[in-house]
Length: 429
Image (cartoon, rainbow, N blue to C red):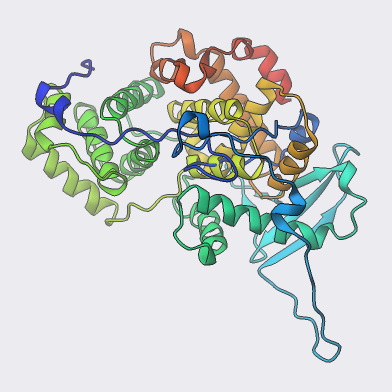
C-alpha cells in the first residue's frame, strides 16, 4: 500500500478542522455513555470536572459545576381523582435482583417491550444499574426517567446535534432504535480479505482522513459504509483502496461543508486509479446501498453519555482513543454503536481510576440507566479494546496511537495503564 501523498494545490485548499471532542454538560459537540456492566459500579466514579467546550477559548472552557437540584428541579406529579392514570407503554421499568453481587440493583428498561439480541444471536435482557446507596430513594422510578430525559435533551442541544430541544428526546430514541437497522450478524470478511489486510486498509483511511482534516463523524461513517459495501459488492483486492476512498468521499459529502476535488483524491492514491474509475465506483456503491447513508456513529453515543455522566476531559479522550481502536478490529463490527461507546467509556474510567466525587457518582449512576447492552457483551468488548490498546504502540498499524499521543489529546495513548494487557484484562473481568 503506497504511502499517503498530496499535491501542493490540494494543501492550499481550505479544509474544515477535525472535530475536537470533550464537551462539558453545558456546551460542546460530542458526548459518550457508560456501559451498564456490573463492573462499572465497582470502579471509582468519574470526576465531576466539566469537560471542555470546543467552541470557547481555552481559558473560557471551564464551566461551573451545577447541582442536580438546580439542574432539574423537583418533579411534580398531578393526579386526577376522577380520571384514571394512564400508563405509558413506551418505557417500562422492571426491578430485578442481581445474581452477581449484592452491591448493585439491576434495572431492565424495555423500549416498546422489546428485548435485545446479542452478537451470537441469543436474546439478552437489557441491563442497567444504579448504586446500592441509592436504593433507599423510593421515588427513584419516578425521578430517573424525567431526570435522564432532561440531561439527554440538554446534552444533545449542547453538542449541536439538534436545533430544537422539543424533539431532542424523540431523536435520542430514534438513534437507539435505528442503530439496529444496519447491524452485522457476523464478522466474516470477503474471500481473500484477511483481518491483517483489513487493518492495513483502515489504517490508510485514518491517515487520509487526518490529512484532509475531516470531522471525526466522517471517519466513522466511512468505516460503516465500507463494512456494508464489502458485504454487498464483489470487489477485488486490487480495488479495495479505491473502494475505501469512495466510502470516505461519500461520508465527506454527508458530513463536511468543504469537499476535495476528485483529482485531488486520485493524487492521494498516487494516480493508481483514474477519475473515471473513482466516479464509476461511487455509483456502484450508492446503488448497492440504495443511496442510504444514514448512520448513528458510536462517537455520538460516547460523547452524549460522557456529557450526562459529567466525565472529565481525560476520560473522554481516553474513551475516544479506545473507540477508534475498535475500527481496526474486525470482530467489533458485530456490536452496536451504543455498545462500543459504553464499553470504551467504562474501560477508560477503569484505566484512569480518577478520584470519586459525590456529583460524579450521581452523574455516573444516571448515565448508567441508559441501556447499552448485557454484561457479557460489554465485558467482551472491553477485553477486545484492552488487548488492542496494549499492543497498539508495537503494531505496524499505529496511526491511531500516534494521533492520540499529541498534547492536544492529552497523550492518552501513552498512558502507562494501557501497556499492561494482563492488568487491563483483569480489571475488565
